[in-house]
Amino acid sequence: MTDSTTRGEAAPAARSRVALATLAGTTLEWYDFFLYGTAAALIFNKQFFPGLSPAAGTLAAFSTFAVGFIARPLGGLVFGHFGDRIGRKATLVVSLVMMGVGSTLIGLIPNYDAIGVWAPILLVAMRIVQGIGLGGEGAGATLMSMEHAPAGKKNLYAGFPQMGTPAGLVLANGIFLTAGSLMSESSFTSWGWRIPFLLSIVLVAIGLVIRLRVTESPSFAGVVADNGVSRFPLRDALRVGFPRLALTLLAVLANSAVAYAFMVFSLSYGTQHLGFEKQFLVLSVTAAAVLWFASIPIWTRVADRHGRRTMFIAGSAAILVWCVVFFPLLNTGNGVVAVVAFLGMGLIVPVTHCVQGSIIADTFPVEVRYSGSSLILQTGAILGGGLAPMIATALLNATGSSTGVTWYLVGMCALSLFGAVALFRVVPDSSRGEMHDRAPVATGA
Image (cartoon, rainbow, N blue to C red):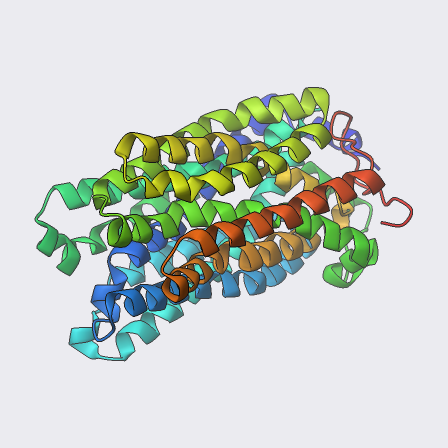
């Protein structure tokens, strides 16, 4: 069965609503997630770990940031199971609520001076809630949009949820900067940082209104009509085979690591070691995210027209090259050069990021696609992005130089480049054709 057998149920208006809903939902969820990352880099070491040195406090704050990634595989497995059992729509509604509640409660947690050790404990608990919610969102939103796509536009539609990542970053940094500019630095550090977190409940309410209006995925509806729902979707997803699963994971690993290094770690590094102003760095990252957001529809159209293979491999190589120069450019201490470094990331990262969701989804047949995609996506997130700021901070503290951080990122990029080349050698690039609900499994993959 192919999507063409069921896609007739998805009228153009329904497709547009789904694209908007997945973009809005992922934007709000990533807003919450990135808001935490920005606060961890700039605020949480003082609020929740005041007894530690600035370096140790930052490392501790980034450790709580990593906790959210550790929780993401759990969210991916739970939401993936029910997404393959009861449908994409219901699970995406629940994940959005979890993320919003977790973020709002972070804005209400008293600091260490008020309740002692319970402050970081509660912070970690809410971070786990955030991680579980985002773990259910990532793969599900991509599938929801991609499975509504008309023929020949699979990558374009799968790219709408991917646009939520930079959009969430822009929204988080914009509100963070606005709140900080309206009060003194001492007031913002003391209590003003809570305002962006408390706004989450309003934004999630808006997202829910949009998301509740979408229709269920035609592909999943076809599975239900054919009585093809899997009883144990994760188990069945693993039948794709370890070699192909491993190569897909390797191919997407670097994008997450590099993105979090330049979006999160660079904030603390730039302020504490290079003397850049906090506002300048946040604005630079935000400008890069705007470029990232704007370029995704361009790259996804290229993938739909010419295929993903060459574009993804070239993008993987370009990220490796830019990682070699990124920190040396920052280390010049020149503001203009630093902006170039960030904008380069904003231009290069989306080349692979925009299609990684559809590449992962194409690994699995539709009846287990949510579980399988969640497994790859969230494992890659924790091994790549979740640990990146913490590893980078530890390397910096141990060596006193960004050189170790550069080589760490270059190593991750080399692994992904190898994974991408090997994956496309054994798996045909079907991205220009019609999406099939049966994943192509190549011999030896």
